[in-house]
Length: 227
Image 1 (cartoon, rainbow, N blue to C red):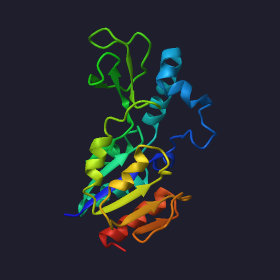
Image 2 (image 1 turned 60 degrees about the horizontal axis):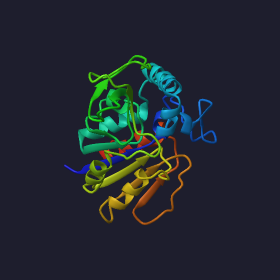
Image 3 (image 1 turned 90 degrees about the horizontal axis):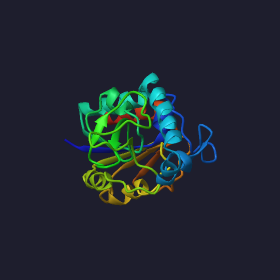
């Protein structure tokens, strides 16, 4: 069974109604991103950071996967599909995709500030004073700016096995995620689905200048031979 590796970014989730910060001069819901998504911001004002993610969590629980998410699940009919996402939502999982690697963490999980491996599911508000079993504050289980990306090595290993690479809704300008392209085997067919792709064309790259909800289902039909 051929292996498809899919790299997804904010563009696929935006079409479900999840807002992104890169469309607004670095502001995310009116916040300087470094105030709410950096170790420095956390050290300065834990309450502000927690309130910000509480709002994001509530929003996530109100939205649904879109046609692009469901189309990726459909690819599993014929292919071994691994999704590597920069998104912290669970829309891929809700659509039914079985192999999802979250590079930047998961919004519906929290972890201990004492032990990074002490992670738990969390769907309600997280507040100052919510402690782990060792009496240390819990924090969102997300990778903030300036923090290491623990799942990157796993993402490299997955990408190295790709027979087909699909990139959806990401500028491929954010590192280390952007470096994953360098780990795909030589001559791997690459499909780049984005209405404004910021990438140079080359022989094994096919650019699909469409939003994910249109481009992904169309590509899925082609790959499954359903057109």
